[in-house]
Image 1 (spheres, helix red, strand yellow):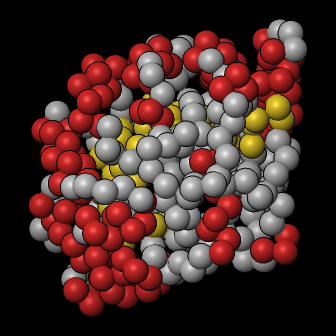
Image 2 (image 1 turned 60 degrees about the horizontal axis):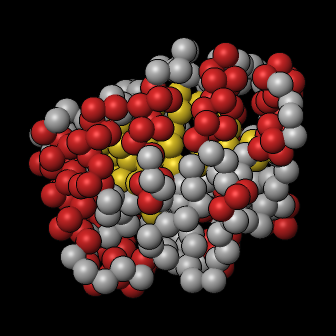
Image 3 (image 1 turned 45 degrees about the horizontal axis):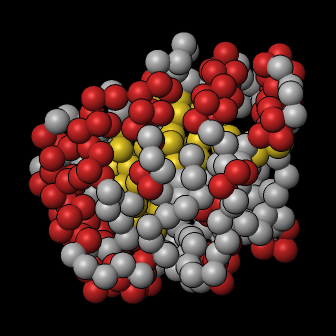
Length: 323
């Protein structure tokens, strides 16, 4: 689909749940309310909306949450989504804690890529950030190595925070030793993130460039997202940067989001969207849903306003929006 500003919109992030097994400070710490179970779309309802989206030209889908793997049947849903006519790619974003129990099913489903959210390689700091007690990092990295051995494309998403700044070099060493990508992401001022302080991509770049002077940009396309990728000679993977706050790249945005309750969001920054869940449950047929979806995508806003919080209308947390 082409929106009113000439952008090709071919990517949809699909949240299957707003629940999670972690309590990350910037996403859904204790006290963030989850949706009522009856308000969350069934897999059949989500698939119906994805089929309509695919018919409109949405060919790439990212399954998100909350933590998508806490919802029973997620891997079966992914296998069914992969089989929808017109769908070219289905990937998933997970915190990785449950990945060991589902990796073989994801592989069997034909998953096209797995993104693992991991902000530190230190278990103590991981516990402070997420509320999880235990050896999470070892568990995640062991599963990551298993997925690499199967040839699954892997990316590690790391939010840039002052308390994890010293870990940046350790993440780069993962890229040196394994064919995975690490993407350093600026903290978005959404939900709890509005009150926290993140770091700019420029600080991360300078830190890594000091450690590896050969760090240089590539023109490789390594997925459907906006990351800029850099290489270092001898490294098996790539280092990516996503600077959504300090560098507005909305002119090339290609995505929309479907929340777990069926709200189609054309932009993170804005509270409004189209409540496809309510329309679907109210009896709308596929043609009517398609028209509403088309209109929402065509009228996608030109840009976000992360640089001016006074203009930010979205107040929901990231787990409610869909990651």
